[in-house]
Image 1 (cartoon, rainbow, N blue to C red):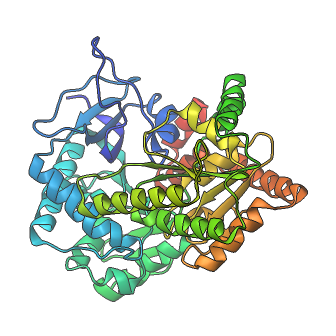
Image 2: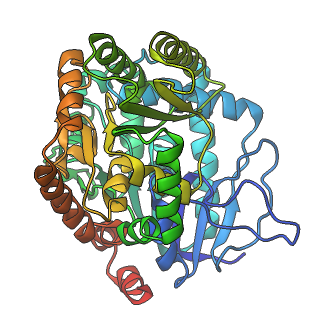
Image 3: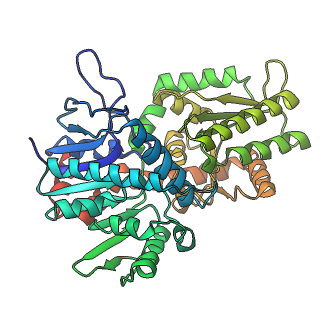
Length: 471
């Protein structure tokens, strides 16, 4: 069995769900941009990606993609229900997002989480070279670093959490809190999106496990575990190049015409998730229409809400509520051929999304809580004209990096309404100055800088040298 000097471990494999008739697979983008970040490095070193292929039953054998080995991990229907939909997304996800929805706790979910994490750890142990670097991703696999260290103490193990890490008073609710912390502490380096998350983790290591800790390091009996903030980024140059293509610019012009050539276009692009603040945003917009501060003939809201985790009950209820509210607003304020809200639930390809970004005079990114939110960064990168207003939640990780955005508290309905009006009527010179500053930041802090920063902290430099050589 071929082994690898770099192993990436994530819930999903970074390939299309379907394989072409000739057996070929293609890379697809992960929500966190991880594929874009690591693709150059993975092509220049013996590498394996360990993950779930998307179906239930035996793990399929998959071909290499760009010389990267795909190692699939099997999930049964029970695993999918209890590990993925259960403990990961109905226990950890809501808790880590400030308990916007009440987390659920079931013993069988925890048992499934342990079982699946063990399976991922064993698969990783099989494919890793002696002394290899292993990079474990996100909340689905928090036990993997500890389990893997027991199986392969020779490995260099990193863990990165893409979502927020909660304050101690919330995390302490978890029935199996100590096991989760010990699982993460199997890593040599634990990365978070924000410094506050690292601080929260350090406090819990001391409070729950009695380990001496600072915001940079946890002292264990046999070794030191480093922690820190590594804010995830996007491929800024790629998005700018895409948005600047003539066909994308032409598509943006057609979209604006199809929307009725309004004076203002507000855009929101979200997964259908209760953390995204979709209902609060719709309520604020509805009240602005009712007060007459916003008029349908002048302003259009485009809400893209791609369905997510549709088998989880909380998400089904959310979609019903959102669609009922959109229908009410359009029925009350829309006209024939002029809906107040253009509501879209289908996924779009990258070029179409870039065209939408170019159309949007105001990009409303107002989650109640978000680890980062890369949509905000994509919008800024796509505004090659140095125009457009980013209305951004204070509770998105991106707010710490993009202070020039129009920041808003999405829990404050009156404040949200006022900031929407401010964004709609912002001074053009101020808009341009803010956008240029944000674009400059993203140029220097792109996805490649993120990968280099993390791997230089984790590795002895050999992998980082390969990444630099890769471009």
